[in-house]
Length: 211
Image (cartoon, rainbow, N blue to C red; front, side, top):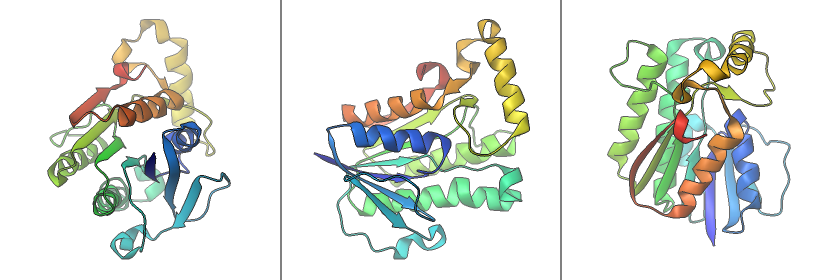
């Protein structure tokens, strides 16, 4: 039986992922790190309120098998590029190190289509940098998932994303598979499937491989 540790459980992919993990008989317990407790109860779910700026001081006394990272924000929501970098890079890296210290052998991370440390687009550049930094940590199993535009039940209104989602779904038949919008459940499902395979190595899944 496995133990999972999740960061980003309140987000679009994270909320779907946690519910899936709780349904899997292979996972005996699911632990989530949250800034404040989420409205989800299950006998196998354990919520830990954490300060992501001081994650190294958080006392957790259990062994982890698989870690999942679905943390992410936008520059607009974060308020600045530096604040965005803290969430999408620094917090992800701190979580990975914490998971490794708890015994995790596998980490599975939501990145973004177009992620590259050499990208001229700041968002994609940060995503590429964190991918490289995660590789350097040395997890035996590292899965990177790069979805296109995410579809799902958002709790916050993002007019631009809502319009883009409508356009991509309307023109789906014209869009190459790699760029098609994808539902969060498909991303979460692929993450869980990959974790349960227990395959060792570094794996990248572009959006068309998540469909």
